[in-house]
Amino acid sequence: MDRWKGRVALVTGASVGIGATIAKELVRYGMTVVGCARSLDKIQALAAECKSAGHSGVLIPMKCDLTNAEDIQSMFAAIKAQHKGVDVCINNAGLAHPESLLSGKTSAWKNMLDVRTHCGSEILMRHCFEAFRDNHNCVVLFSLQSISPGLVETEFAYRLHSKTPGKAKETYSQLKPLEAIDVANAVVYVLSAPPHVQIGEMLLRPVEQQA
Ligand SMILES: NC(=O)c1ccc[n+]([C@@H]2O[C@H](COP(=O)([O-])OP(=O)(O)OC[C@H]3O[C@@H](n4cnc5c(N)ncnc54)[C@H](OP(=O)(O)O)[C@@H]3O)[C@@H](O)[C@H]2O)c1
Image 1 (cartoon, rainbow, N blue to C red):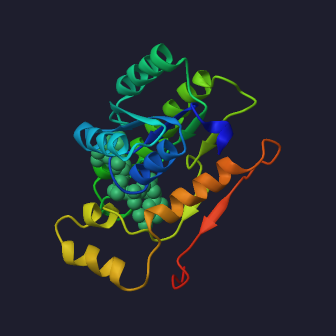
Image 2 (cartoon, rainbow, N blue to C red):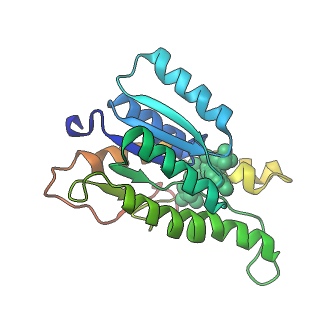
């Protein structure tokens, strides 16, 4: 990971769960990590935790709602002004609503798709490619499911089943799920590969998960 020391990573959805753990790990390896999400206070708390742990990198919290194209634009303007661009983009943010495809609310599906595809991928990735400081030495992860985890124990199911928290608990108690650090370790593995090695896709599954 030495070659990434002092270089800039953008991690979306860095307030909790997988994104927060990835952000913390990259800071531990000496990277300058811009962590974004809507809950700025949670990223600020994580940044303080990284600082007091004495990690060699730094976490810079930025508030950004990925359903809002203007938020994304302002974030990249700040990244360009403060860091001249990014070297690594971990496009991790995402959420789900308990709405079925056939009878679910259109607004809920729009929100999920805005975060993962329209704003969160199309607009974010366009800005990201423009912001790459060195196009021959950059890494994009997660956006097109380049790292695809199975069940990971995070806030995801608790947010999905916010009205029926018992269901969320049940999701994580039926088998031993992955932990956020398992996914963060996969990210570190990808970044640790020598510059001539490109890892296209990684599938991670809990051993007990059937599908
Ligand atoms: N957990 C799993 O089993 C699992 C499995 C496969 C793939 N994944 C994927 O992995 C990613 C991370 O999941 P997780 O398990 O860590 O979920 P999580 O604990 O619920 O965290 C989701 C993150 O996404 C951010 N986010 C949601 N809506 C956003 C928005 N409009 N703008 C900016 N940020 C937003 C949240 O931040 P704020 O709420 O602060 O904005 C939070 O940081 C997601 O894309 C998910 O689909 C998860």
